[in-house]
Image 1: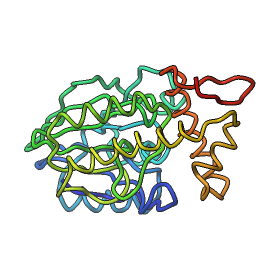
Image 2: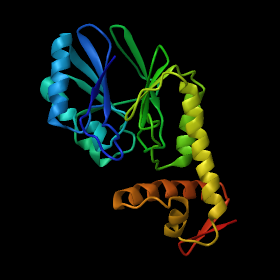
Image 3: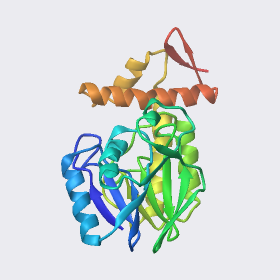
Image 4: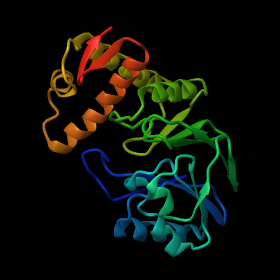
Length: 258
């Protein structure tokens, strides 16, 4: 496995998107493609030239631009690459590239590498992770190295994380941040607990407030505009779960305990 950085550092991408060249031999698999930076294309070409290989399969974790934006660059280098992504949700971005449908449990093989695709919604509706036969988990944005991800559906996210928790993970290679080799299972458990603790914190403060008022209590340090937007998505996802669990109601855009 060779990590090829996306050259797109930022507040939410951390040091940038991690992409991974998998296998040995002539044909290789690439997991994610960054967001289309020219430095990424140059680095990728240097790697494949040095390895004397070609990318025959591209596996996409989810539709966010920092994971699919480099697909055109990969296809410029390898026009015959087959690009796989979850297409079950008719997203606008599904029309951007010649995707092939990705299925839960689908298996991909190249020399010295077997990868199983795993449906893991929560961060977003079409999110997948990828597992090697050595129990190495390529987690996309389901779990990051050194930060917490935002999510669109907390119930789905917790179900996805509990699914992974039962797979005896040996190492985690995230879409952003550092690799987790020591304590992979602990990292998964910590992320599950963090989400549950946040849900409890949100529930405890609810007392007839708007989502903005709840956000200011639970996330007092979310100062810049983009951070506030992302935090609001996660907070809304938590509130949706609390409503679905019949613990909270929303009336006139105000939230109350049941």
